[in-house]
Amino acid sequence: MSTPANTLSEIADALRPVQRIAIAAHVRPDGDAVGSVLGLALSLRAAGKTVYALLEDGVPSNLAFLPETATVLSPPYPALEIDCAIALDTANHERVGEATKAALAAAPMLLNIDHHGTNPGYGHLNHVDSAQPAVGQIIYELLKAAGFPMTDAVLQHLFTAISTDTGSFQFSCTTARSHEIAAEMMCAGLDTARLARLLYHTYPARRLTLLRSMLNEMQFRADGRIVSWNLTRSLMDEVNMEPGDTEGIIDTLRMIDSVVSAVIFEELADGKIRVSSRSKDERLDVSAVCSQFGGGGHRMAAGARMKGPVEAAAETFLNALEHEVRRLA
Image (tube, rainbow, N blue to C red; front, top):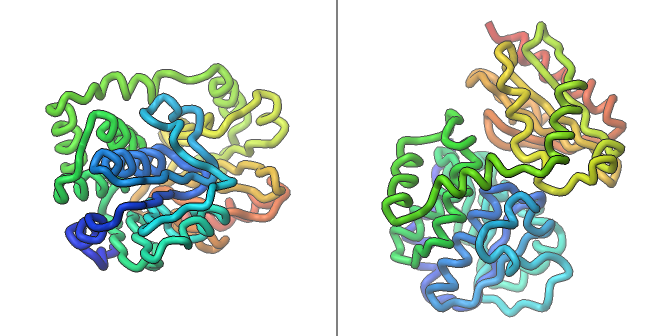
């Protein structure tokens, strides 16, 4: 478990004097990435700073309901004059995306705030705490400790970040503090029921079409302990899939009683295969399996990129995963 190199107090002290800030997170942003970036950005804007929120792939449609998402910039970026750059929820610097990394390079100082244990500490200041279930939880503690503004819009983003990365407070990474923070947000007037409805009970029909295909096509191995699905370009085109449509869909596979690991293999436009893996057993470290293929992440949730075609990539990955699963009692 990683220990933060710099305290939140040191991060806050670095932020106070700077005026022009760019904040970014990883490509294909999820709820923690979007929520952390905009939660921090809106707080610092409320403190009177000029803040640019950068996301290489923009905000996915399933999160577009959140406040101020229209202010997020995506490539091509304008020339930015910035005093400080912040990378959030990004295990290595390249994961912010090529154009975003170049934009952040304009700043003389880079802050790296993350919860991936594999993060090498690529910033000038680094707060990497793998004990935290979501970067949004770290940002909440940072804002609270520093006395930065926490408006309703800021809380909406940080609740989204924490809720989505903890599986709506169900995953084993969830801490007692996660629940305490949610309670503090509710006491501050945040309508968490509304956010939960928009996050988990307001899906486009195309997502249900994808879910139907997944349930029809899922494949089992290792005596039912591994389940996988190949998400093809043809299916994506058929349903006009948008970024965010598959967010969390893998958890439907993971809920099968016999399953200890679920994997989705997604065909990307460049011919590579995006691997998303989940574990349901603390003894099974899917990040270790993903690391065999140049990927990584968390013990219970990790990913990788592999060469296509999808059938070959799936067989190679699943063989490695099955080797680990069969070692379990």
